[in-house]
View 1 (tube, rainbow, N blue to C red):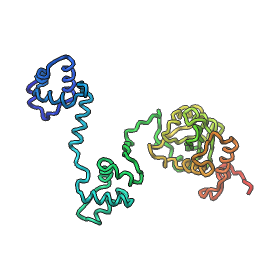
View 2 (tube, one colour):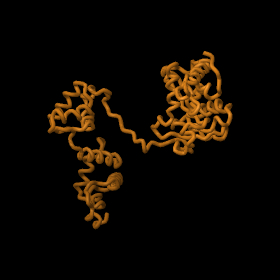
View 3 (cartoon, helix red, strand yellow):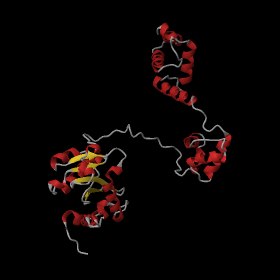
View 4 (cartoon, rainbow, N blue to C red):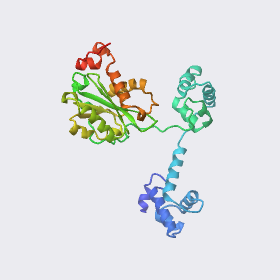
Length: 328
């Protein structure tokens, strides 16, 4: 290593590249003093590095050593969680009373104006210092779940068209033929219920699918909307579930445009979410859709399409859309 570069070094921690050189030198039989000379380090640095970071059988692995070193450095920079003993005592007392960390953080300023702590610090204190206190949390978990970044989550649906590009007529519900699609699933089996909800007319279409999978979802939509006139199949709005991967084929087979909600924004297709909620009244979450007869699903669909709607002046979707007169 260049001695001039060594003089300008602003830190003394061994880098990953240097640890790689140490590992290669040890495996090649090079002495520790020679390794130190090549790296421009003092021999005692190399000796300490090998002694502290070798495995029990005497092997030195650069990759694992680098990870351990980075972990130790992170921990050495962490301040102690809730160093004030009075705050610790307050947290323990209130947790045992059933208070949440947010309630504790908000109340401590009123009870003891000279003390303060954030709810996040309380959580960190519980999970990292006093793990025995986790039993007093509502969740009761012994480990804290990792936060999931919404921005970095990958979208595995090709050729998605954002909901921002959906026609204004569809947004305003002023033109028929714009649908929302989703599935009602159950843990009892792989079978699911495909639900289509028309935004302007309020019509609901149901069909059982054997699996909540792309091919089954596509076939069900083609089966139900394919028999509709062209003016009643203009677009479909989906969420980002993997069962909607084959949406592009629908543009060719039945001539509908496909749009997708933003991630974690199911409210953007609220009509179909409401329709699924109505099906749950008859088929709760523990329903095994595989056991439903086709007649059962047809009956449920008819019930949904014959419910009076306030926005239609208490006409049913069938009456509003097709002028069908229903006998009382």
